[in-house]
Image (cartoon, rainbow, N blue to C red; front, side):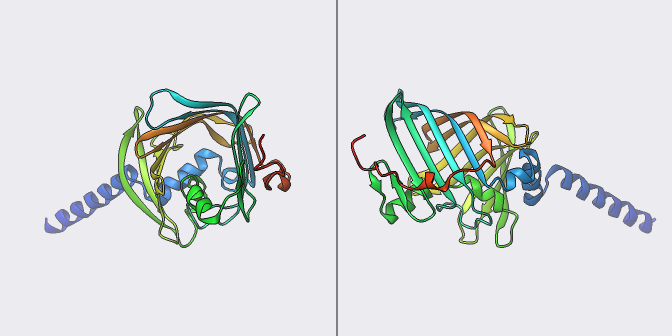
Length: 255
């Protein structure tokens, strides 16, 4: 009888372990499922990305929009093996226009940061990118040197998300929230020079290549909505002229 009890106890422990494993996948397994859900290899290594749409910007002390960009575009050239979560990497250019009027423009060519007023001092540029860059680090999260941790799951926009804390080799932490059913990334958050930065991702579409893109992204700082971007056009892996990321000769002039 004692032998039978020990056998049943061991079997129960095994079943409970299997149940717990099924109910609570590891942080690595959650990220792996997220990568597969977003398109697999093409999503991990897109090389280039072009997004175009519109954006609404809010003032922190008003309920009405501060400005609207009916022409909002981003070009990205990615670096493989990224290890810093919230620093400038690869190359990027973002342009926001309202009709023919330029609202703002910012770029990084892999060496210097510039905007519509000219070159941006390094300290200012580092703070800017540290408040805006962060999503791409998920593509490096399974590499050596990264730490993955569970965070408590939470309800998000009518569903449940599993939260994983990704800590880069420099010790910078970023929270990613994966939809429990689709495994799409619905939420991201990190501490930035501008405060606690959060992003909500909605309205997902799968392209013919398999790439999954959120067409609506809303950014918050310290709980206050900063802007919402509505992407209408997406191109992944297409060639981009690297000269596009250099500062235009007209930057700093009255345009």
